[in-house]
Image (cartoon, rainbow, N blue to C red; front, side, top):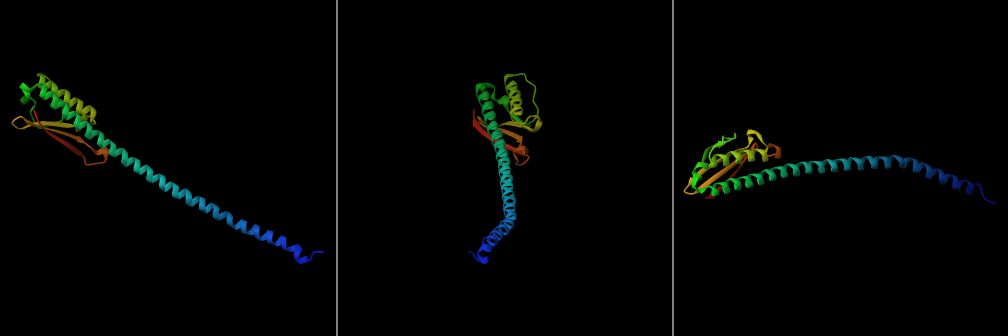
Length: 161
């Protein structure tokens, strides 16, 4: 026959196990809340990095467009070499000029294309100046606030016609 001490022992050990299990429930919930907080902070960091990458991509796209547009007007000037002096625009041109001669039509089409590919409106401007001899300087200026940089950016190209 079992003693009374042996009969009561399993009951007491089960009771301790239940009490221990009940006190552990809150710890699991706290761990879940902390992990959700850490995950949320990580996701916010990823979203911020994505935003910076998009702004950088926009700035890169506009710089590439400026290079391609400058190359476009340089090739138009080379194609019309006898009238290359007519392409000279000593002041920054932000509005689309009237056409007329081949050089004026090229400039009109060029500025229209610049404004269509680089943000539009009068925020995209251009200038072509003779730098001496057959060297010309092409300046493309645009508003770069969408990319997160300063208000205006310029791309300057010098070429020999």
